[in-house]
Length: 504
Image 1 (tube, rainbow, N blue to C red):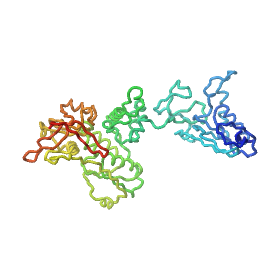
Image 2 (image 1 turned 90 degrees about the vertical axis):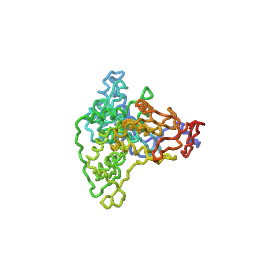
Image 3 (image 1 turned 60 degrees about the vertical axis):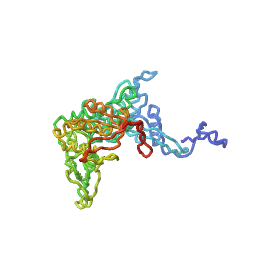
Image 4 (image 1 turned 120 degrees about the vertical axis):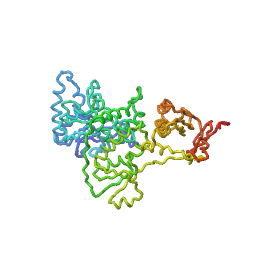
C-alpha cells in the first residue's frame, strides 16, 4: 500500500501553493523501495517492520551510526528500563537485515515525484574510513592527534577526530570527523595542513609532524624561516586574542628533527623508464616539481646553471635569514628519492635535451635579473643590481677584508633593500639607505626596519633619485636626491612624484 500526496489546491484547480497542506490517499501503484528518514528507535522499528514485509528499505541517518537519542540515555521513562538493553536487539536486527541498507552521514536534500515514483536526493558526507574494511580495532583513535568535543556526550567530554559514535554503534566501524577546510589551509598557497601538524606537535610526535608537513611542502625548514605566513592572518584564534604562531611551530619541529641523526630517504621505484623528464632550474619550483614527478614513477633530471641548488632561496636570501645547511638538507631529501641533479649545467638549446632522450621538459628558471633605475648614471661602475649583489655574497665573491670600511648607499625601502643593506653591514661596510616612502610607508616589515636600525644602518626617507653621479674615472661617487612632498601610482602602475621645492 502506498500513499499518494494531493493538496486541496489541486482539487479546486487553483495554482499550487507549496505551503498548502497535503492529504494522503491510498494508491494502487506498486512499491519498489521505501526510504525511512531518521535512524532512531522509531526509524529502526519502522525499517524492520517494512523489511519483514518484503520491502527494500533505505534507512537514512545524519550521524555516523544509527540509534538516535535513545542510545544516549541511561534509562527509559516511565519503566526505568536500561535504554541500551532495549535498543540493542533492534540495532543488531537493523544492521543484519538483508532488506535494509543503512546510509549514515546522510541527509535528505529534496523529494520530488508522486506516489510510487518518488525521487529523493540525498547528500552523503564521507566517513574517510571504509566501512567494509574497518574491523573496529580502534587503532586509528590511538594515533589520531586531533581532539574535539564529544557530540554524543553533549560536549561534556573530549574525543578524537577518529571515533566510533558509541561502543555498540551500528555500523560497527569508525569514522573521521572533518568539518571542511581550515582557514589556515585555505589561505596557504601550498594548502599546508597546519592544523594537522600542530596537533601532532602538541602530542610531542615530532617526526610525524614533519612527515605531515612534507606531504604538502618539501621545504619546512625554509618556510619556517622566511614564509610570509598567510595562514596566521587567516587564523580564527585572532578573533579571540592572537593567531597561532604557525610559522614558528613549523621551524621548531623542523629544527627538532633535523638536530637528530638524518634518517635515510627511501628511493622511489621508477615505473616509466622510457619517459624521462628534464627540469631546467633547481629553485623551489623545479625541486618541488621533481619531487612530485618522481613520486609518480617518472625518472627526473634537474639542470642547474649555478654551482648550488636552491635558486633564489640560496642566491637571493641572505645567510643570516636562511642558513645554507637548511637548504642543502631539504634539497638532499629530494635528490635522495632518485632525482639526478646536474649543477653548473646551463641549457641554451632545448633540442639538446630532447636529443639526450628526454620526453618532457619543465622550464623553471626563475627570475634572477633585477631592474636598474631609469635615471642618468645608473650604469656607472660601482652601481650594482640588488639581485646580483645578494647572489655574489652567497657565492662568496665578497670578502670582509676587501670591503670593510667602504661606504654603501642602498636605494629602496623594501624587503630586498633591507637584505642588501644588512648583508653589506656583515661585510664591514658603512651602510646608508634612501627610499621614496616615509618610515611608516616602507614596504619592508617593521621588524626588519628595526633590525637594520639596530645594526647601525642610517635610513633617509621621502627621497627621490634624480641621477647617479660619477667621477672622472667613470665610477660612482654619489646620488643626487630630492625630498618628496607626495607620490602616487596611476592605473598602469606609473609613478608620479611631487618634489618638495628647494630640496636638492
